Length: 210
Image (tube, rainbow, N blue to C red; front, top):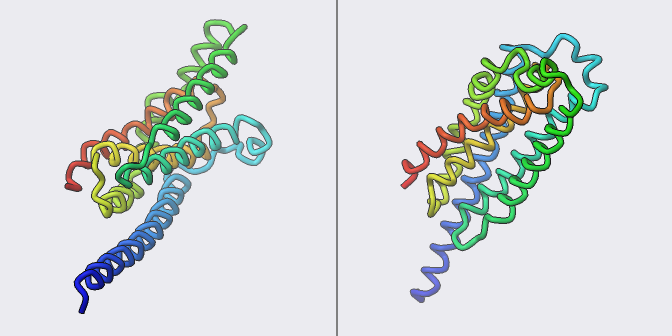
């Protein structure tokens, strides 16, 4: 048989296998996200006033903000796994969204007293918030890391960090169902710190993909 034909068939078979495994890993990621959601609801429970809270803009802001960042992190991850694909666009969008949010959070404190400003930033749950988010992200981290390793990324530390960040941001959205803190500065600080913890783990675990 023609050697070129053999090479093409082997390549197509490899690509087909990789796509099949990738599809299965995405299914595992969805299952892990559902497990993380169940963990958040069964362990921490929804906030007591959730029935009335769903009618407020802040409730949805605390979900939409991390979800939007998680979507951009996911796009960055997918691009980081393809050699030669630029990742600067989604990263710039993430940075732009963060800066815009922090500007809005800063403006929201104008006219507040010192005590009100402190409450908007620290809330009453700042000590536990980041760690709860990091723990909720745990079920999602192993399949996210495994999925990224399928493609042998050129920068495994970067891909691992972005995979962990995406998991942490999804976990932050789940945590918002429990959190009753009303301050935008709280959301922009402690939620992101919580998401940064699995991102750090992802960066640490990333080189193991080589």
